[in-house]
Length: 129
Image (cartoon, rainbow, N blue to C red):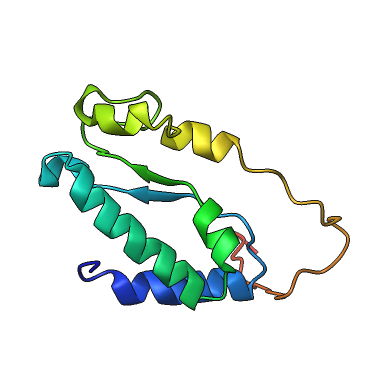
């Protein structure tokens, strides 16, 4: 089970799906803290996919989301494959950068309003005015 962040993941996914986000890339960080263990990665990956399905993604869409094991401190699987996770490279999984590069840009024209309109007004103080 996902530690501490399970509900954050579910609620974050719900919000993203509700706002019309249709592409996801998941980075499972801190793989160095679990010894770059494939079994730990598989357990967390299953929990992530379950959370995405609970948030409203179809089974097929949740299965297609890239889940990349990374260790941010040493840079494992960020831009280049890590020698610490050869099991992942053998699966031909993308690095985080490769997964992000595979995302397509939205086909929604910029003139059309999105599902949520926002407006931010900040007071401006002009010196000497």
